[in-house]
Image (cartoon, rainbow, N blue to C red; front, side):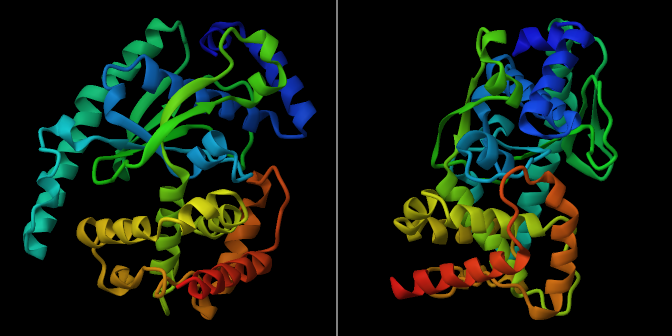
Length: 332
């Protein structure tokens, strides 16, 4: 993987183009997928702080578990708060709401400083040492906990953000986790071109991500009369796909984990309207308010080009989520 990044543009472009033709995907998607996997290899096997990181989110579901079939453009990472000087249980100390908000703000400020002053310079140095000529790392102006990586681009697609967003937060739980094999599309298509086609990445277990995503939908179910954030239809798609995978059985065997996820959000991301206290086997809600469905359908239509597997309708997704709730309630 590292060698392909150092090869000439013509060599790298030929493999990308052939892979795109074989998979019937845009070259820009194949190219970005390669750099996403390359960056994960750098973070978890060449960075000084790799043991303090864990991979999570939608990209972990597609690349690490293969349970969703949409191209995920970002890398979501958890930064171990112990690296910032906190004890393993210190964030869990009982505090008033105001004191907890001050603590959260302090931890976020420390995270911002670490990303800006420590991690980003380390990534720049590693990338230079890898012989990558044209690249840039910078902090997102709108989100201080996002490092943006501008990779060497051979292909252009206006529907694709041709930078990789490294979204890194410390107010997150990374247990349970496991090692997962991550392989770029180019290595799946042409394994003979790679000495090491895959990289092993510490990844949050999919059953936790299942409940993380489900509690996002639970929060959105309470959003009546409020505009939903953009790109949120992906969470509905992801939960639908997880429900129709083997991960469902792992998640349904661990409703305690659902309640732990909800308790974490209640403490560190408290929103009265989210009603995380009801996010359990009997009280979980997944379906959006009816008035928000047209906007979600429009949002989903705009992301269909990022789905490389079977494209189900948004109506099918909602039917699947309703079925999931019935199954959960029948087991209670």
